[in-house]
Length: 296
Image 1: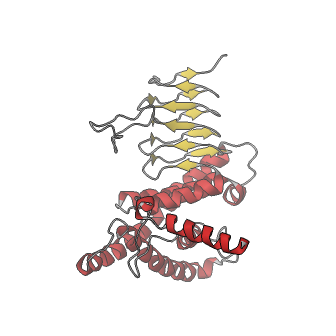
Image 2: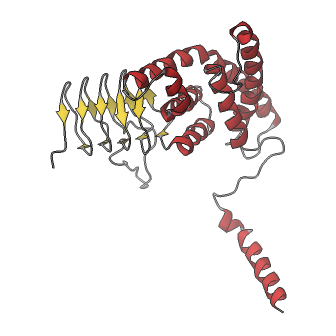
Image 3: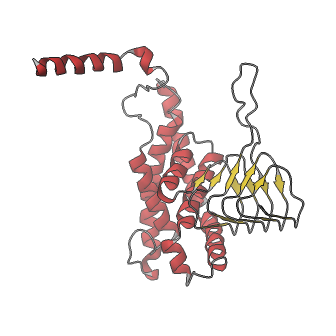
């Protein structure tokens, strides 16, 4: 009798979970061969990308300069194939039942985008190199660049972000956000792929940092753990829905330092050479070379 009652209970639960009304907005019917992007494959893409950008630090531990061209060539070929397929899934993610003509055009577009992203890798590596330098110069505890690359969460986070940002600029849906959220889970640092971040950027410690979608950060900026560069409010349209795509996050100019747990909200500008003290709230513009501290 007990087993019978449990079977009835489970069957009733299955019926409730299968009701179309309960699935509204929470269900996506997959078309054969075109599922949503795979987090597992995207993780493989990031690991492969890190190995290409920083040979010997990620991927195969034994890399020889005499064979580096061959190794990178193999990795790039593998990366292009993985990227092409995942980008295709991303491009098709908004189409519930894409027609054959649409799919054909998106296959060519996905291959082109994958190629364009990989072509950006020399520039991405150069920029990440400046970030490594910033992390090393900004931390007296750092003994070497090897320590920065091997141990510091900011480099893993910025690698994900800088790859995701290029995909964001190339118009790829969904995948850029998945990639930055992977770094968020790994390091505790949350950077939206739409944010614009200059060279020589570093985050000391890192846990709890949030950088919003429309944030613009200049060169040689350093922030500490717990810093939020967020939005102050969300303007609503006539139907009461949040207006998307407007500039709502801070602009941080060159040579700024923002200390632990500071919060900067809204489309405010923090001018060049400013210092924002720990546990400080900033809701208005700061003129260049201004220092703001919480004295309480």
